[in-house]
Amino acid sequence: MFWTSAAPAVLTAFLSSLVEAVEALTIVLAVATVRGWRPAGFGAVAGLALLVLIVALLGPLLDRVPLNILQFVVGILLLLFGMRWLRKAILRAASVIPLHDEALAFATESEELRDKARRHEARLDWFAGLASFKAVVLEGLEVVFIVIAVGAGRGLMGAASMGAAAACALVVGVGFAVHRPLARVPENTLKFAVGVMLSAFGVFWTGEGLGVPWPGEDLAILGFAALFLSVSLAAVALMRRTEEVLQ
Amino acid sequence: MTTLAALVRELAGLFVDDGSLALAIAGLVVIAAISAVLMPNLPLAAGAVLLFGCLGVLFGNVIKAR
Image (cartoon, rainbow over all chains, first blue to last red; front, side):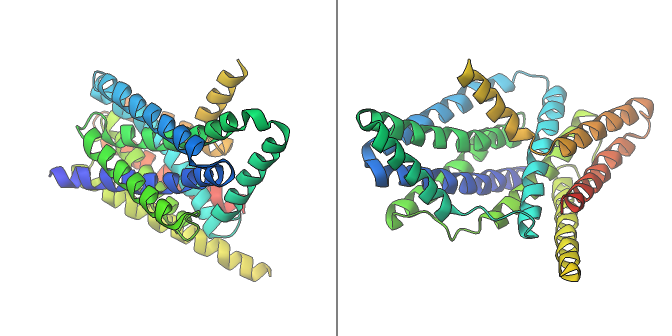
């Protein structure tokens, strides 16, 4: 029974962390390329420390909130967050909006830092470290929310955190090895999968908060995920077909 | 103050991207909650409203966005 609850939570934390870590790594690499590893590394480590602190402080605090209130509030936030991710992933898969381009993000960030270098040479290490810190914190906040949302109140904070940390370690390891943005990671596919899982968790938790006795208990999450996946794929197919007809 | 406002905007942006989607989700939750209160003997009705409502809202939103 433990794994029916833990596996989706750990997998969701792992995949979302993978996506966000790839995006953060792009900025950190851009900073390192323009200004060296010292400010880039310092900013990234400081950002990670802040994220760990947030999880360490918020996790135990949330465990004191009555379970049904926690489920209801976190469920609504998960619905908003997950369906936002899923909407964007569907629109990208249907080519309505462009895919996120890591190579372009890398070039843009590098150019911005070079521009700052020309104007504020003396303070550039500070700007570079701050850019790295900001990237890690902003991308990491989404992972922190997911870890807390899928883990708090069910004793899965540790497992979800480990899933997220494993993805970070994987991305950092590959990033160090190849020394360039991980543009080949199928980011939209991952976002699609995470959006589906988070939306499924959101429906489950909001319902639990309202006192809905879901058939199959935790296994219902997998059923909801299958429904969200089917509807999303149907929407992508319909939009693509309509586009073809219009052309 | 500007930094704080930027932080709040950044945090809100985590949950709200398309206003109409967020509003529709909030509306669905309210309807599901009302169903749960009005029909305590049929708690699955609230769950059905929530699940199928979310699926419908998502489908409608992305099709409209094309």
